[in-house]
Image (cartoon, rainbow, N blue to C red; front, side, top):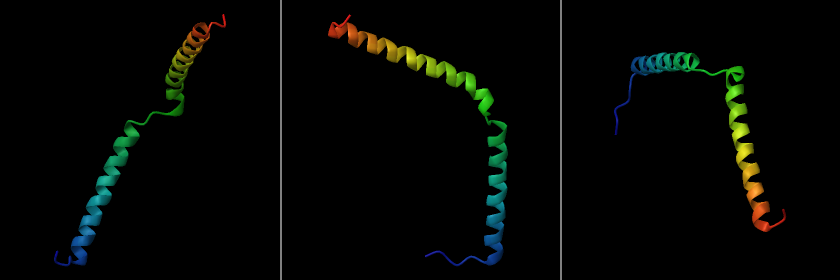
Length: 67
């Protein structure tokens, strides 16, 4: 069983954790990608997915002999 901690040590640990969270948040904000920066990537990925799906549906139609 762990010994009970004093209020001072608990407050010190809480302060340290808060400081660490503030640093982590600053790191996240530095590497954040905005919606406008992500839009071209999204368009390229969606275009690639559409191309694959159209090719797949075309192959199914040819395989079924409907063309």
